[in-house]
Image (cartoon, rainbow, N blue to C red; front, top):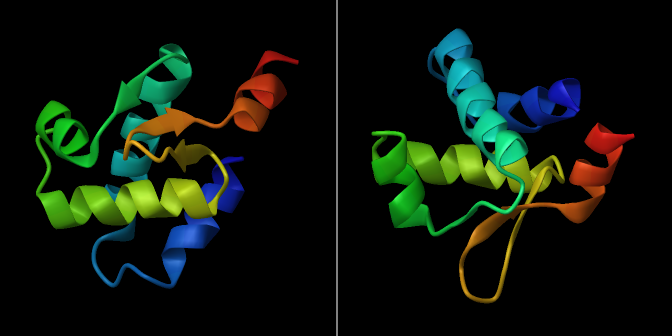
Length: 88
């Protein structure tokens, strides 16, 4: 999963790749450790103390990697398929 997430963001981010990967892992880990976590974009950027635009890029990358989904309510959640692959 990590390779898919990193590669989904590679084309978009022109800045510090190591820093971006650390942010990606930090956010991804929070959702994995708390599978029922459900956050809006503003809640996520406040929780992780990130600028809104940076947070949106990371969240979009996790959606592209099929790690997270965004519901109709705008909340980000761990994708069920991602959770099942971690649990097995």
